[in-house]
Image (cartoon, rainbow, N blue to C red):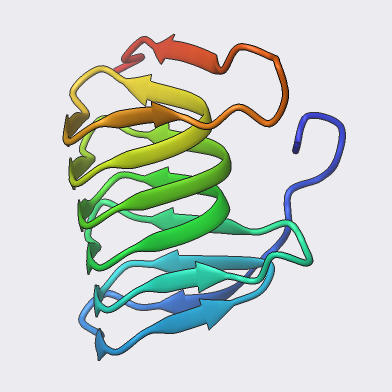
Length: 131
């Protein structure tokens, strides 16, 4: 989805030290550095990106086009386009994806379910740790 187009800008930030209880909806891009207890859902009419940083924790469902996880997620992840699971990521829950990039050190405790948009095979890429 983002191969030829520029990814949407990250316009919102939940800062480290911030804790939110309740569901969130967003457009374009959202970065979470703090803690969220509730579902995080991106609008479907425009491309979206959600970044869960190393310092972040999220307890709830995720629905977005492009999801990047490097923190802790407890709940189901729905990445409509691409899911990037970075080295410090810890996901406790099922993961639904079209494309998947998983780095060495990342952990997923749950099912990996490929969501095919057509008769194509899902993209699966194992990224090497460059550290």
